[in-house]
Image 1 (cartoon, rainbow, N blue to C red):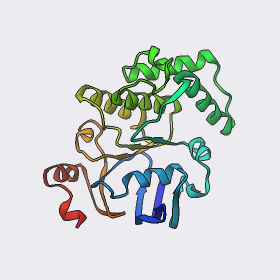
Image 2 (cartoon, rainbow, N blue to C red):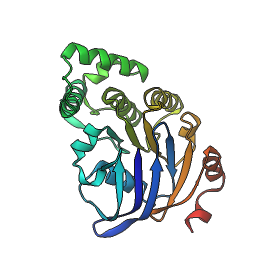
Image 3 (cartoon, rainbow, N blue to C red):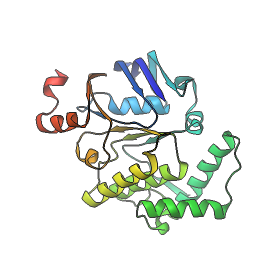
Image 4 (cartoon, helix red, strand yellow):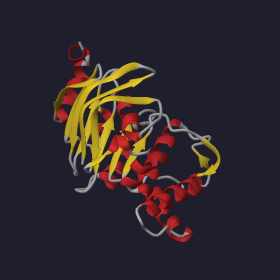
Length: 247
């Protein structure tokens, strides 16, 4: 589904990714862990198409398409979702309005009929209930006045409504208490653990992986993947840290 080969990327002319390669198939959940400054968020932004992140070498394809040649809205319409480490606030725009417009824009790009107001609200209620979010919160401006945990839960509701093929979740576990972590983990499993979907989880800690069991765990250090393994690798990192691998 996603294939990255020898990816190099810079931010403000500073090399961050230095030859990263990774392949993720449909039906798989991969976790990337690593120390601060390793390039984890840079990888997510490059895949999502954020301006200011320049690819200087290598390639990334999504379902056979050149991902790096697509605009961000084209990547979203193709089925890519990026959950931000720090979700932004959008004053004056309600969650319901924002999500309906986003979903219908994607549906039109795929040649599908847009959802009516009633059809959309039915989907929104279902996904909000899955993440234990009150529908009143979806009527509020996007992320305005939300706690850190509420912002992350709101992003998972967004993911459920947009129903992507591939989700890149950048430190979704940050700012979550134990109950919210379990709820978000259950939501990720319910929405994305399917044979036609895939997930790339970016995290510092093993705790989210207690709820979203990955098929593969990768260690990103100094801009490239230095080790890969199964779920036990995350527990090893939790116990011993990154020092030896990042050296």
